[in-house]
Length: 346
Ligand SMILES: [Zn+2]
Image (cartoon, rainbow, N blue to C red):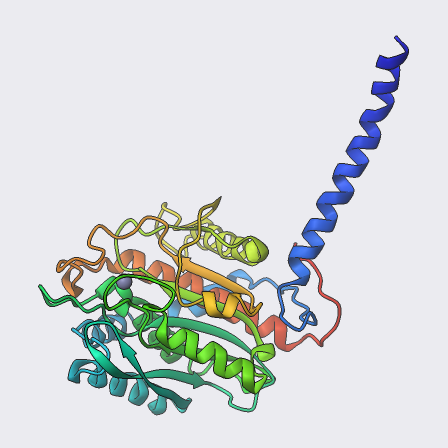
């Protein structure tokens, strides 16, 4: 009897310890959101009118045209590759973005010595902090067939360019700005390994670490494998799950208000395993990352059928909508806040 009474007394203590530990974990997860541990981010939610206004800015015709221009064979250091690079640079320069290249030469399996070019574009080059969006613009080399790589990753790159265009008059030159990075050489030339993959991302992360620029990145949102009908995003990185949850909430809101005419959410607050991708060299250097990669790989993944004709524009535009809301909410909220202690997002 005495021991069971003792056990009953232990229950509330156990509950208190559980709550305390959980709170500590949440706090720790939020605190590591920024590399320099000084980011404060409490988004002021967009209201219905703002969402509706932003939704109307869509330019689906431009999105299709842009996918068509990028979705061509573009193996590193080939004519198709330079044509796509030029297209991306010109597109952004026309919109008055500051575009820079990170170029380097490296020996790779099968194809030998190749020159790579990462493309980095900033809306406000003098900003102190950046929300960074990334994708890779190279296509994987296959000896046996021509690989157009529409979902991998022409569509993600087109979504980023299209966003720069539709948000042209919404982006203001404040201390926090948007940065777009188009990585080169994500794909392996022979077999995926630490050395044969992520050529551009590894080079850029190292370069920026040396220059002390990584602290200026609030958050890096990486897009990959988008464009199939059954695209679905799940929470795959533990320490930014709170920010991922915001994507889920924004999409819910867009569907509930009828701004998005669909009943099928793409963003799910379920956990899933993460995959190796361009974010790794940055994540290892403690840059906070959201990895928007379809947790169900497209059926055409790494096949000759991954072509522009197979892109599903309903889901692609849906991803673009949610991303646009997230970007605007982030930039608006963060711009009006000063550096200080990190707080949780509610
Ligand atoms: Zn691939």
